[in-house]
Length: 222
Length: 376
Image (tube, rainbow over all chains, first blue to last red; front, side, top):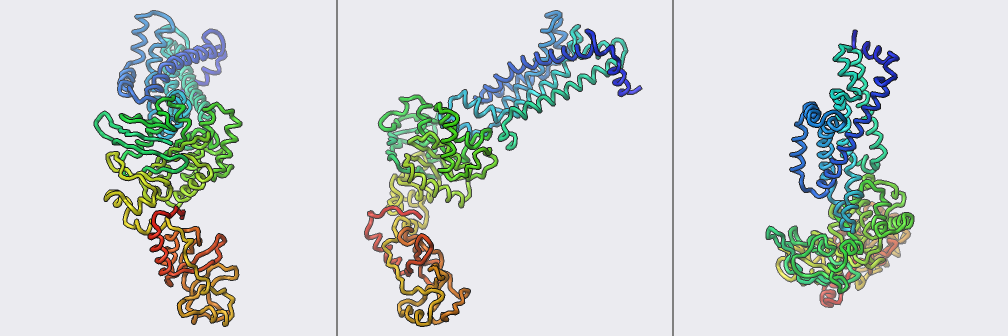
């Protein structure tokens, strides 16, 4: 009886591959929760980080909020939201978003601040407007760091989205929580393996995105 | 013309960067702002394209106050070159250069064609077009910076210490290139530097600023060297001001002697014929007429000249093109005290002694201000 044995028997059991509790369904749910949470967190973190980084104002306030948000326990927040709001996707999304905003916000701000000031000065001096300076001069250079912030946020979301199962939602957390409850360790290990696998896939996706989106001129000079 | 009229820049903390500065910057020439750090030269430059707004006074371009047009329109009409070039590292060289034309709404193909043309203009191999800035040397990056500033053919070029981050050899190449470009393009260039030699080499007019943003002197470089306005300017110009001033006197008036020149295959009669009591040495040239070295007439054996035994001839000057400074330098460098004048192909056109150079200097000084600037 070892972990590999559990993994083997979990994945070779054909009943685990279909139905509402099958691996494809749970994976789809998990991806869905993760993507929604990442999209919301990015929609909050990216614009705020880009603007504060571009103007250089509000950095202190930003890191204060980020530190506070990091100190919030996701699980505690989930239970609190569940009590306040009840069943549904919203009480799950709130702790995931709170978890993901700080890394996105802080790295985006830092990435923008670390852009070499001389091309920015040159761009302004040749008559580029502020929006173009931000999107055409600063952002392309800051992109690798910004993507790394998004990546760590995404990985934290993927591993934490398991808590959705605590409030009767789906996702890969179902296997872990149900398995623990039923003392079915094969299920627990199988679920954990799937979560770990998804984290690895997330890494791969971000690697691919940065290959495509980051200019070779930036990739090589950093 | 760019007119800076009683401009003061005072910061909220009370620091005065520029103090009641008035300058008329002439068209189609290079005006250099030079001075020690903290003299407000960069601040002055940045006020011209409104990167900084003056606290008092006005700046006008061709009679119109620069604050009367949209700031980005103004900036797009002025090329801007900064230290370290400030290239966009995510864009290829050709796209860096095409930036302003693209902003002005040119099509991609037209802008790239223009950029490629400019690469050639500033002496960049067109094979570099698709490279990224990190693949270029500092000097090449700076050339890209200049090309980018020239891309939309602006009448004005603002250059903020553009060559101070590269090594002296590369810097000299970039300065020569700028002078050559200026001869072709005739832009109104405002150039900031802390290097007085650079200012004297490049400037048509030089404004020396002192700490606290006050104008110490505004004059052509030759006048700066001959008549520094005060002790500060004199001190800033450095110790060998007299020698440097010679750069502004042409070697055209030198009396070049052709008699003490012999070819390496000369016969004994030719050597004897060239030997004169007033010429202690003979200059030996190769068969094409290029200098090999000096020799005492008695040490020369016809048909068997040992070139290894010849005395060095220093650095030859381009006769009529180089300045008296180059001629004097050549004379001082050779142990014989004679300078060698050559033509464009390096063939000897004549030799001149230190004494003769000295006389030319005295008569040039006597001729006074009628001198014109000679490069090199």
